[in-house]
Length: 165
Image (cartoon, rainbow, N blue to C red; front, side, top):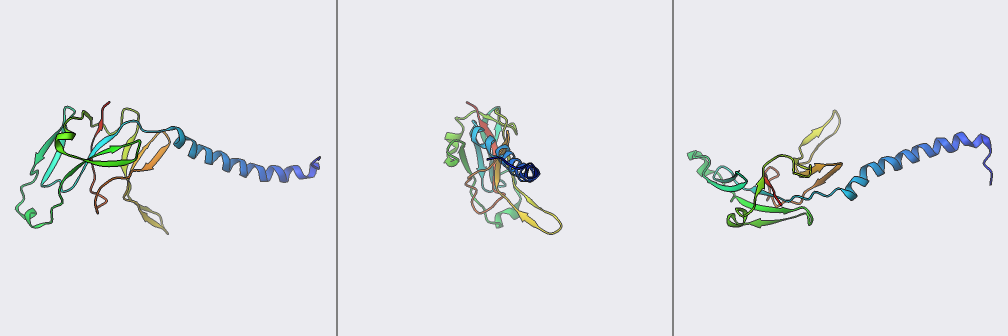
């Protein structure tokens, strides 16, 4: 079947947007198929004013009563908890302090394989606004929301360190 010469501009005019749509979709979704973060991390949730943790020389240390403000005793306290986040399963599991102390942690913002943990925020423009308070892992063309155990509060997350292999 031969296409008449007068139809070529129409064919090209329809083909170019379709081809561009396919190329953009591939550019967005292909990195997700092959990029997988390799480093798990440890984080904490809870009321950091009463009890917390910090990492020193790659080891987790408990820091009791960061603030001794007498007014804080009247506010509700949420117990501080430690969690291990497994990148392969996209799941968190709670840790005891004794378990968490056994890990060597890297406190850099970027993991050794080039990923970062970021928190969503409020955004918008003149006509529309949106809020996304989730926690994401981003890097190498990947942006994925993490399935964290943070309780009822979006801000109830504190990254402690990447687990060294």
